[in-house]
Image 1 (cartoon, one colour):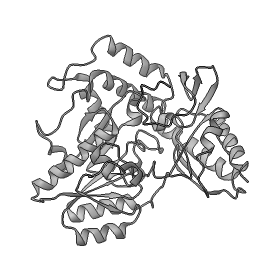
Image 2 (cartoon, rainbow, N blue to C red):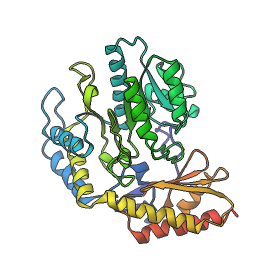
Image 3 (cartoon, rainbow, N blue to C red):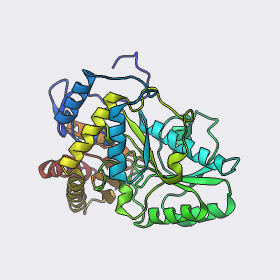
Length: 389
């Protein structure tokens, strides 16, 4: 890699030249099974023909005007997203961090409109919401925050999957205006809360007049076997953020709102130069069409069950495996010790994974994956993990 790049990543010793479906080829011609999808981004796999065609056709027609004018693709995408989500309207940005920034601003505006001088948002320990100053403050990871103080005020932290802690905060802090939570903590280690966790948050928000805000940036767009992870329960958020798989690699983020939250932003309150441009929206429209046409929420459920069951069976006798947990094709293998060394070892075997929270192997394969490829992931990882025994 060139020294002209800032050292923001400790890059692996590989550069990819092309991709097709769940496979990538490096510059030397070696093939790799992608079990990470660019960190939950390329859910349709690589070089999806319909997304590529949509991007090419739009690039030849119109790439950018400005949000001071109407953008037909943006309106179509907003209609599609509100249809599948049950939300009322959408603001488009360029990333998940921008989507969460919009959500944070909505919560603060909501609080000020209610006369709360210091509107405060409850966020969770071990969460991840982005790397802008506000979103890294909301993130529950001290390593992400270190060196960037002073952090942004207006956040209170609580343990994930602990309703009693939220209820205590409600009693003692009258500045709370919203809760921001991931339905499943991805960067935090693929932690899945109790089945009724989000429903209880919804009830607590209703009781106290708070906004329920869900960060579905990693869990959304069919990843967990539903369009959105909260749809495994019965609760609808007031605000929901999306990005990652929405563009299948084309940068785009979205902040969806409903009810009172949907009318908070007025002209001048928020904006984006590139957000919702014709090119990004054309890609996202193609993504939604493919996800619907290929029934990828169903495939994520079926293949996710095959992956978690296969891993549990293959690793049942390993002393190094604490647990295997997953929801759809969002799967974590928690080991009893740090396991970052498995990432380069898997790379040597032609498998792309990553490790988060020091000891959790995180698997986020493309949603178009098939049974034989699932079995390859299981066999490769089982071999590598058992070599530690």
